[in-house]
Length: 454
Image (cartoon, rainbow, N blue to C red; front, side):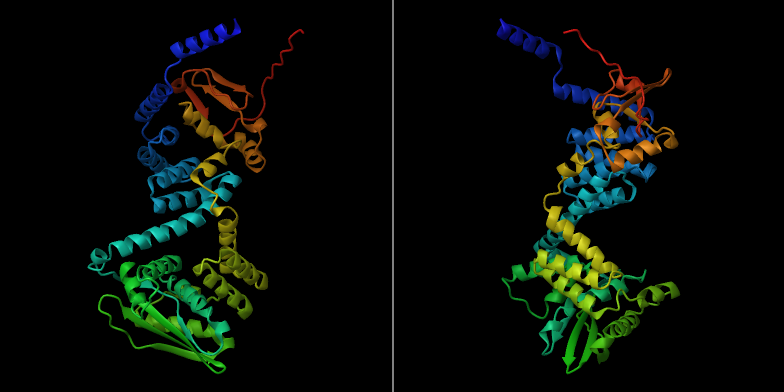
């Protein structure tokens, strides 16, 4: 008899409940209608964008969410889902930009940690994908010369008897990239992009790398000029040379040269980079010159550890790189570049490979921001409320998310406010006639406890 009842109940549910796809389409249709009525309403756009993402309409989702972000640059949820949509579309550049925007304006610490880890992996994936595409389309790319104001700096070449100084090839190139980037007149290719392309060229040549590989990499990365540098150890002295190579014509400038003892390494780099600016005919503003003159560290041991870390990264030895960067920041706590690299490598080694779009989205569960998402999924149209009324609750929810602070607060347009403390529940009224506030309502209200007689 019980089996018959179960079968009958399932039959009734199948007959009455509309298909899930139809329910989703109906919810999206309602949200689209709400958007059409208020095309400049951030909450309506955000809700529709999230619903599109849930329906795997990623292109539509990104378009709508980007509209919301343009109207409100502090809308963290729109930035988050714009990043997720872009990653689903394979647009890693847009995904990185949206994720970085969330790091600036988002509220949930766990989401930020997931995003930081994911960004490390995305940067590597983006650089590798771009390098593969460049090599595959070399014939076409080579026909278009790069801008003379786009500069690439490959690792310097070291020659000398003290092999422990070889990591300076990477460290000094990194310093030059940083200093050249301070000029608003130049676009400097990121170190990781240049290295990824060099690695791809090496693979395409079956390990053989000739002297023209750097110029070839510069051409493929659309750089107009290449800073080709060298380090030469001469007893206790060190000489640094740099030549500007025109990638299109192959014309090489007269070398910029400085030499001194190893103890004066940082002063040598500054003297060299100012000579490079002169050869590039770049006039620095006083503010830019002041930025160039700053030293990231004065600790030679810290800089050597940092340089070894860069070499380990390029070799794919990420655990070693993490230890080197940690050593560098320990030796000089003010060495910001070492601290940033250490944090990046920690994220890559601990969670970067595991962090994904799915884990990023899941990390908002139980937080204040998840209500905005839940409302959109259930086709609720969102509207902001007084921020002062919910600041304390929002902060508490972000720092220590729990089910108790995940409430549903429904506000009728013409009937006032009713608060129901019911985690994970959604409004039962017509979603288009109901407005769900962006921020959590105070966790207060009426709790009804029903005790049935035994």
